[in-house]
Length: 259
Image (cartoon, rainbow, N blue to C red; front, side, top):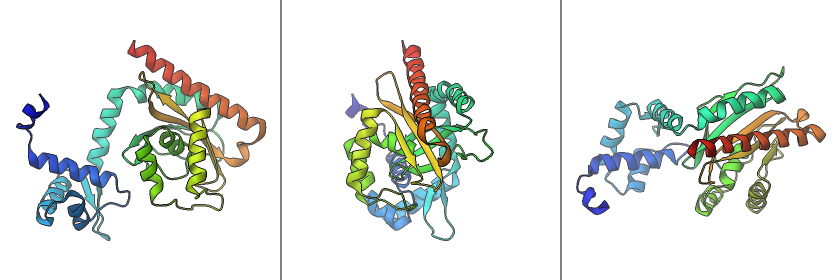
């Protein structure tokens, strides 16, 4: 059946989707020549494809580097697709409850290619709180609690690709040894939670736990973030328990809807 249906495929549309996919997996964007090499297509063909996608709002070009990145139209479509999955609707009351219980900033993130995307958040009530704007896109390899949860539950190939290029140092405490990170990812899978202290931003800590869909696969990560001085001792243990519990509530609610 699949082979029979392929005769109805539009080759140009397939090439456009290939261009979008390649650019989505490149955090710094791609130039026409780089994209041409990745797609194994002539530069002239790729140029027409990207200019069409720019006109549609699906791509934007950086005027300084001339590289192309995803445009706001892709975010709009992605937001609608995620909303249809129900994960935001399910998670929003959980995020509100997390912030009510802890006064810290809560957020929901999902995987987008080699990155993850914050799709919902609730600002903390502390005088100094973390700020997580929805729509923020971050590479999975970056040392964040949400990223570690999502990467830990990704395929071995995705993990290898994320760690292959080496790890960037953001603060003096950033873990850049890939062997240590792999050990940390194994611990996340075992313990059901990731805790990061000051690795991505100094003086900020975060705790994240996975949301499991009805097929028991990780569909997203719920996180709590705030000043490191508030994520210590017995308080840290309580925060970890709260995040894990609320993530489990969200997973259970999703399983209930699917029945």
